[in-house]
Image 1 (cartoon, rainbow, N blue to C red):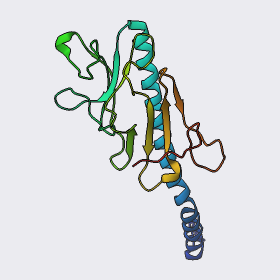
Image 2: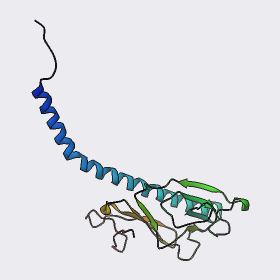
Image 3: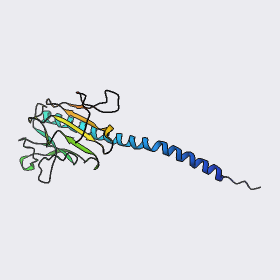
Image 4: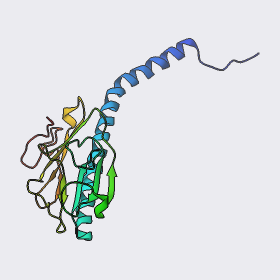
Length: 187
């Protein structure tokens, strides 16, 4: 007698039904997990960049600027694009290699569907040799908002003293807020 090993049609259909049920239940939470991980990664990367800029300003005793640069090497408000950290000896928010300024670090653009904003029309963040912000009105909040997921908005607050604080979900309602209790909202 020959024995045949394998699945019967009934076993195959039952297995496929169970698999489809698991995928149907698991896919929405997988999508939420993916968005949350993307937001957390971007906030962490930005936080590290800010700390790096502050420490470099103090250790090198010079001005360090963080901003998105345009083709003319001038800071813009396009925070969702590539961000650059560079020495800015004259604090003019312009990268000038001819004046011995150099780029220290670069952060790639965020997901094209998401938003990253810094304050209202702020073009740059400049740290001075003391570690404090070197330009008036430079303190503000970075707001990261993933498209169609407002409940996953996060932020980083930059104080006048140059300190950085991540927003948190301190009310345990799933929404990040700043220290004043305001929700993180992109416009």
